[in-house]
Image 1 (cartoon, rainbow, N blue to C red):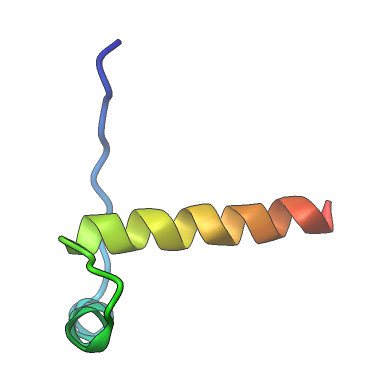
Image 2 (cartoon, rainbow, N blue to C red):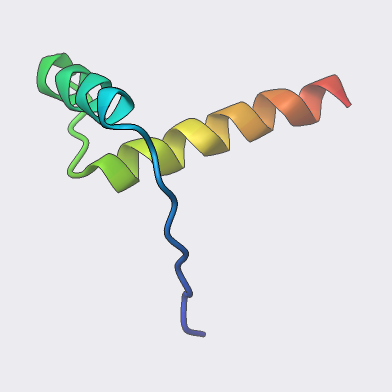
Length: 51
């Protein structure tokens, strides 16, 4: 099964905040996309608990 991707836009300020976090973090993110995907999954998991 082929995975399909979509693009999203974020502000430059938010991108810089992500980059700074990734530099300081010891979690080993390889890209902004990887960081953002994990953040979304975590947030959706929290939202699911509230339903």
